[in-house]
Image (tube, rainbow, N blue to C red):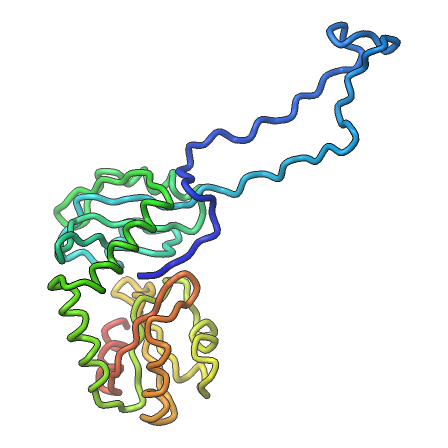
Length: 258
């Protein structure tokens, strides 16, 4: 999975804030009286103040997740927080029970930590502070697995070949959408294609919240096949997977979310 953020490298929410510039009364006896030959100049010529550091990267690590855990489960676990990305960690081609969760704001990390040792299903989940470099290292490992010869990579390759050979009906399923994605965002993602808001269907889960999936109806099968060139391109901070679908599958998904 490929995601990006605009936060300081290595930030884990515990760095000391930059020290405030000390100001000293020029009349202080330590620096001499106003008539003294030595005078403290609080803002010497050419002094340039340092800009504030960017906020720490808002990511937490989860451990002890159920092995059938989904992104929607993690979003429900952190209900009320803005989820930018969920990256499940695999080892040897198998889900390790760990994940990284990128949040919308650094302040939300403290709220996420309050969910430590609460349950997803029958498993209690541990929540830890993490760092940007750990998150991106995990992404690199996932990419390496996909390029290597692991069973997981072989399944992924087979799945991609299935996408290429699938029959197109003019409908594509999108997976991995940001939970905050709107129809306008999806229209912008497919800006090279003609579509209306009515042709975009964002799928909701049973609680009435976005599931991270959507269906898009194109003018014809040739258009949907051409749109597959956008597979695994990014929308916001998320890379989006595209799958050939059908009107019946789309209607079933829409009805389940009602």
